[in-house]
Every structure is written in structure tokens, then in C-alpha cells.
Image (cartoon, rainbow over all chains, first blue to last red; front, side):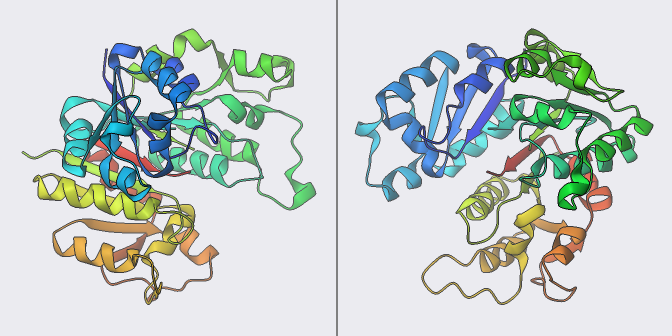
Length: 100
Length: 118
Length: 119
């Protein structure tokens, strides 16, 4: 199956993106890219656990993480990345994006 | 090169411009001959209700915006389970829409090159 | 041939950092050698208004003009632009006030990927 990069910019208090992700893609085909307040999805333990069940990879915008006072060691899931790695994911490692 | 687009409508009509904007984007793609499909899901299924009266708030009709797509053979799917969970019987939908089960969405996605969300 | 990316952004210039995120994705993609197009739709058109002067926030109009110099093409929806009271000539020079049917379709039909930046 085609691989999908899901883009999320909202905090877990605003949105649980996993409901939609599960409808649109299998876990093994799904990556999530977190921007802006979306980074809290990877910091909050229960939200991160949900993400882990819905996608096989989580990329966290490093500058959005740092701006909000957190670092890689605070992540409950995923890894901190820069824009070049995000672009690689969108253009080369996945086949389409879906914004939630 | 993208030859097909799936437009996801997740927002209900009139409170936000999203659903109308998504239907207009779909029309612009369909007019150009691109294979275009609209999927109404989550609260987007409220756009499928036949008894909408947007005149009541002087808004353009999302029903008309949907039907504009029919001329370009762009199928409009509405997710069955999202209708059911909102208590909307399929008899309440306007004509020309197709319903689809959640389990078929992944296959629908696979038929399109690109996806956008409203 | 390098792949092509279209970024469709629909959030206003000051209501969130979304337009700035769109610019950052565009910039990173361009620097990697991809062809990049951007289209502003709905509230997104406010990002191309000429003369934005946010005192302490990033100026997304300036950011768009900067990446245009690197070859990122930009257009916005004319209907959405007019709906917000903007007239032709009020857009930054790098952006075209265009249409979904011509400009967005033109971008999308030549693209390998579409990224939507919206709330």
C-alpha cells in the first residue's frame, strides 16, 4: 500500500488525530509529522501511546519543540527533526500527505 | 504528476467556510478533467443533509456546490458510520450522493494520487 | 527530473504560524532541489498582502518574497482576495492573484506531492 505522511498542528486537547489516521491508513504505512502545537501529541504520555498504535513513525518539528521549552529527552514517542528531514519524508519516503 | 485528487470534507456546513471551499476546489479540479472524488466524513457528513436552508443565514448552498460536481462525474461519498453515529438516516440525504463504509476508505484513498482536507 | 511539491495553505497571516510553516517547508524543499509551488486559499490569502508590519512577529509577506527569489512560485485565490477587501496591486510582487481553476490546477497537475497547511 501507498505510504501516507499525516500532518498535525493541533495539541491533544484540541484533537485526537488517531481516529482519522486509523481510518485512512494501516499503521505500517503511516507516518505522522507534528508541527506547532502538534508537538504536544508526542509529549503527553497518553496521546503518545495512542500515536504509537496508529502510526509506525513520528517526526517532531525540532524548532517547534525547542520554542515551547522541550527537547528530545522529553519526547514520549518519535524523534526531533529539522525541515530537511521532514521534506525527505514527504517527497521520498512517503507517497502522499494528509493533513488532519 | 498528479492525475487524481481526493478531497476530504470533515467540517460541517456554514459555520466555517471549509466545506464550501473544499467543494469549490474539487470543482476547479474536475472542470480541468482531473479525476476528482469528494469524501464527506466525520462532521462533514452534515453537508449531505437534504433539508439544508442556507437562505436562512444568507449563505450560498453547499448542496448546490456539491451538485455542481455532478456534471464532471466526480463521485461524492458519505461515510455510513458517521451518518449513523450522528443519527442521520440515509433517507435524509439529497440525491446523487453515494454512501461508503469506513472499511472501504483505504481502498478509495489508494485510487488517488493526492489528498487534501477541508 | 526533480519532483514537484505544491503547498496549499489556508490559514491567515497572523492567526497562527501556519503560513510560516508553509514557507519553511517550501524553503527546505527548494534547497533540496525540488520544484515548489504555493497557493493561498481562503484566509491564507492574507499572507500575500503587501505592507504587513507585524512589530514583533515574523513577517510572512517578507518570507514569501524571500523564497520567491529562490524560485518558489506563488499564487492566491482571487475570489478569496477580493472577499477580504483587497484589490489587485495590494499583493506582494512575488505572488500572483489567480484562480483555483487555472493556477492551483496548474500547480497540482504538475506535482508529485500536495501538502495542505490548514486548521
